[in-house]
Length: 480
Image (cartoon, rainbow, N blue to C red; front, top):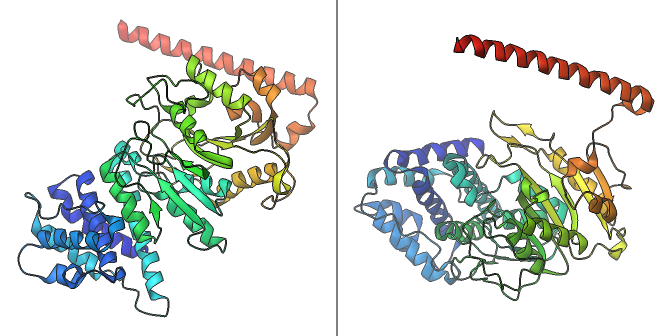
């Protein structure tokens, strides 16, 4: 698989000299999808099948566009989803033909074995996900508009456990949340169709990526008939979801804001930041026993801005917040903004054998977790995800609990509403989870520990003062 991905990425580079990554992303992913569609959709005419596309006379671009149009006619669910850009002026037809040849040589047909078709779809799905991730890295900050790091998506899904029901994402990007939710269901011996996915995306190009991504993974989803802004035009006004998974754009300042919007049950969000608008929209979409996992900028946990602080207070007092997770740095290559996870629950009571967690919030400090892939990117490992999700399920109780819950200093702590009030409804996990205790520290008498820590502090203050003097002396020499 890794060798195939490497070959295909090098093939994609054939277009790099004639356009930037945000453009050739559409060409590469469109071709990958067409390779899948030409064999997966039985109703597609011969002219749209891969051999006819790559071997016809003249420039290849117009034939690709014609094939894309034929696929959309044959599959109404894909209407408007496929790019018709290959025959446009300025497209290097020679390089495009070279790229098509490499993709054509890749083995996606899956004809070997009784389950070859499914295996081929899985392989192509992995290739598509690989390209989405690689293009997001290549595009930097703009890549965050359509891609959430896979380890973060896995953590959201493992905590929420969307076995059945309606799964919703109001800013679905390229559809990664839905793909991971489907994988979760199948890994737990569920069936495709146990969940029904509903999503919305404001960016037209990203909306097309999502529809192609779901089609490649065999997921029938309702992403609405066209792209649209969730705040201006909610595509699913009557939907009440069982599970919401979302990674809204952080700190969005340019957003459509109607102060009279009925979604603002907990307070009108400030005009300059949509964080609490996203969260209120998500809460408004939850069914009577629904749960949500939302990626947010760290400022959402402690902002003193009056409107944001008021909404956060209202969330807590309404007993909607079940868990807050502080994430480690560098998980999001596309943004330097530190991130956290909010988990909401409409029902924290003792249903289904679960523990009664009403008027409590679980705080998880995962800032020290994760493994660096390189100097700029960190990922949560499978063990990290299992530890965080395990703490939540033990806290919640029920069938997914992996033993009784216990606070772990420095990692997790269950906190009563009264204590959160005492802290002004600030939800920063480090404030509640505290510092990890070493084995020696746990047995150390309190008086001795205070004396030791005081000496350490004074020593560090003295060292800080010494270094400050050194810096000042050198600056004075430079001025002289």
